[in-house]
Image 1 (cartoon, rainbow, N blue to C red):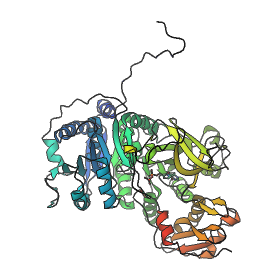
Image 2 (cartoon, helix red, strand yellow):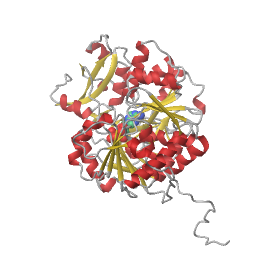
Image 3 (tube, protein in one colour):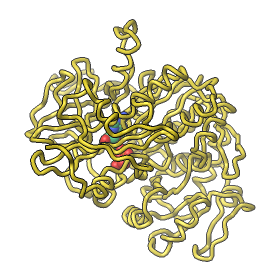
Image 4 (cartoon, rainbow, N blue to C red):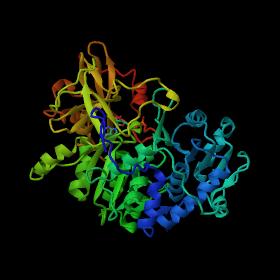
Length: 550
Ligand code: ADP
């Protein structure tokens, strides 16, 4: 065969499209008997296997077709992590429509906005969210069918929602003879809106290709390390950023999957870890705070739990130490965002770190880590000049790669890339060997006398104090310095600590001018829909606070 010297020689391999339906077909054929366990609303456990899940997903694909959902139409879900939600992930995307997961913790006005913006055709919801659906039903003219994720016996009664349908009834009347269509791997598969702390939420429209590639990446040893030997429990919600890809990578690899439903308190999670032999789980720091609190108060041990990925917000060093040194649970710090499907980096040790003392290893693991292959990173200054990877210089963090957003749904916000790179809105450093560390979100950085103060480090130090349960640091206005750091602290139950003691706790740990000027003790911190502290709310609340710095 001859070829033009200037054009590449094309490989002669099959080009089967990367489709989400391929994942569930693989799970059925190769791991059909492997278990999926879900906690139901009454606390009981529902058990079935991948084969059953595939059969019901095929039945659901018929149902969706019957509901007049066409290729590319959006189908909304408002649901916890459970088996029905999992079936919808596959039935909707597999049949060529787009699964639009909605975060039930958003304000009802935002939910109504999102449903309309997405032009959702159907809305599947957990009965627990009935009041939420009733509150928006009149404002969602595009939605032609409302389906409760329920059996007939447990169907909620609603006088407001017209012709409310029952998931189990629909499934039981549908055939399981369904052939997954084959189409372009770049077709849209899922839609997730950012939480929109400023302005309206924006939609990130994932494709089959981006989702399958992200799933391969998340399964890697230095990713989430998912395999057929693991029992995986995504505590991160399926209603926000695809539960970090676990509903795909678990089925891709054959791991046993445990879905915690609505029970996210320390006791419910601990019981499930133990009864199902969970080996791996992923969650945000606020959820793990509850789990660790419960385990410590009741002097419990984990018998099978050996590894967790913590992300969504910086993992406090005290939490990492508690998991690693008190409970023998390996912690992997993960960083990403809705716009990145979400995984970008994971913090794991490299070969040459293995003989380092434990404290030095802790310091490495505290960073957000190396980019996963498929994602590239860089830091730049305010003029777009790339900054050195020396572990000290911080700059705006930009990313590019195969599962990173190119533009928002319906082109909201116009062109968002900067010379082909996506600006994350985070500020970070990168070491010579590629370990990225988030200093702050650019909108949370404190600007004091023309210099930047990173709040993450100040919060981490406070949370290392034994009397501190949670801490948040914000900038408050100052006539001379523009802004100065104010530390807000939630004390551990029964613990005592004074403002001066906490301020003294920073001595020798950061530059003097970084030390917070003041500390306010609060009952709790406002937490947003994705489990993060709402700093804009705190800034508003403390806007009249006057710093004591001179
Ligand atoms: P949204 O709240 O808009 O939905 P995401 O849930 O996508 O946003 O969160 C993305 C942001 O969360 C990142 O830009 C970063 O600021 C923060 N974040 C995520 N993981 C980490 C981490 N491990 N350490 C520090 N910050 C993190």
